[in-house]
Image 1 (cartoon, rainbow, N blue to C red):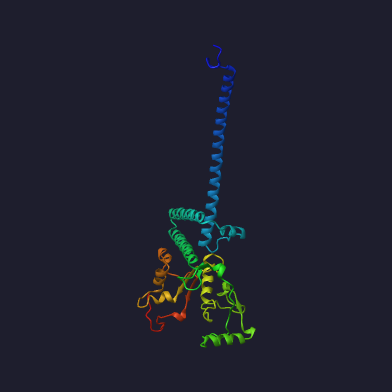
Image 2 (image 1 turned 135 degrees about the vertical axis):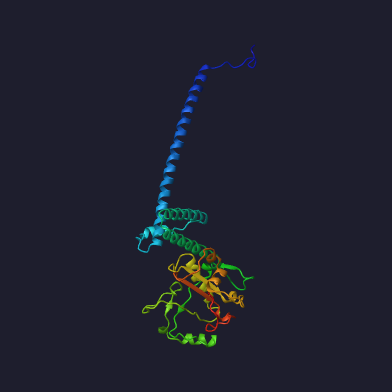
Length: 315
């Protein structure tokens, strides 16, 4: 009877009363916590609705600006917001949301019996999608350059590899037939006043004193001077949205690729569909309402008959 383990510890009723109070406090805390969670959820839903309305309003205004030339232009701050850079996953989610906005808007226009307007909006949207896919394709294609032999060389980012090329305008439009070595010697003796420096992004812009738009450019220079790299830089700047955004489409070709089509017949649209599948997927068959740049690289490697007077026209 005197041992400590021979009997159980007596119940302390005071501690029991504290446990009841503690349980009641915990239950009240749970109720308060649940109410707090519900309040937080309501706030999140309200904020999401506000963001959704703001996004819808912003994208609709962009659609109307694209569709109607006389629609009020956005401010500089709004334009900067439109050009905000986001990561790939967020950009994909945003693109899907925009497609939803377009689908809803087209449906509403059709319910209002505005079929022509709905078709115009849908066509414009397909064009924008095609532009985005084409830019992504060209960016991936031109942002890395092989140094040396392509198979053995190591690919380098064009941004790290590119140095500003000194581009000048010739006063004469004639093609120079001189040997490359003599061409270097002649160029070294030219007085500075005959040379007009031009930046890569401005190569299609008229020079001071010129009123007519530039439609055709031929770049000449010795091998290895950077003519091909120049075309890559021009294409990459356009694809990344850094320059010449008034151009709707840029289509770079190389004569090495075109030579492989010898003996086959293509219309211009068919040729674009062959090399740039994005245009075929978008169903673009006419380009008369677009600003388009064609880049033909490596004319000296051409093996095709450039007999434009006798070659048949293909629709």
